[in-house]
Length: 383
Image (cartoon, rainbow, N blue to C red):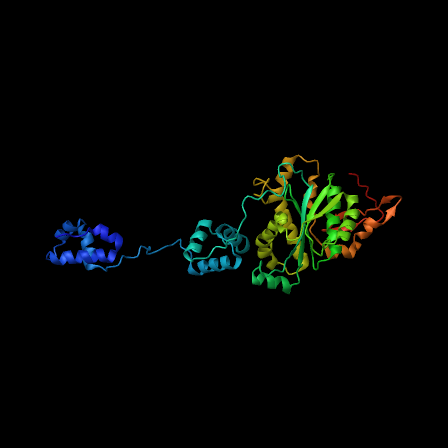
């Protein structure tokens, strides 16, 4: 009698293999030992095929004491879909926002089991670097941009509604040093060129006060809060800011890739600051205080893996450069530009008044998180 191998048939279909066992068992007077010998299997296998179900039994363990509850698993899936994070970022996000510590591998298994789709994006290969990162000196090349905080596409709905309900600042102003990734940040409730000029002036004065002596080149877009694509306005700003050694270089239209460093930092703002801390703030002062802590975390403690950084923090990269710039430069105060305007007005007057053939600058000293005017003081800048 020619019979197909039980083991070969089982690879095709376990049900068919057990049906074969039952047929051989019946044709041999229900003799278990003889059936097992013919098919080359154990007697236990024969009894299992004859007296048990045709389907394989579930391999799921009867008890899983370390298994996450279905409620927690559903929560992780919902947070992943809402934020778009994968296992590594989601693990960090759950720990920072909810205090829930779950390993990356566990989250990876949950996302795979629930078929959570992964967001993909196209990348271009073979592009040249934006800068020569190995030869850049600290605080010479900068990128400047603003971020609209109330963004429905970037923030979860509850965070967006909370910021709107409690009237938290709407715009973030950032200048980032390309060499060290050091950030200088301010916030406002509206965008205007007056605030743009004020923020650039504040950062430039801060840099010069802390012994930055090289030319400060700032790359920015053509937004209305800056020069708005106007050649006349750009020439005027560059002429006024030249007394601080600042040179503004707008990018060409539709060339956002030239601002890649600061655009990536905006994503980190969403993921590690706004999504976690914005809901804990009910006043603008609370928001500014947490924003200050976020800037300090970025500058002193957060490692960066971008080109030229090699996993170092901005402060570590600065120390390694052996620059003569004062390390106090990293303690730039996070400000609300409306508060500065109430105290000193716009900054255009700083560059338009002459005194004895020299340009008069107003010096500022830090007090309670804001710049306070020191009346009658004249700051002589040489570079």
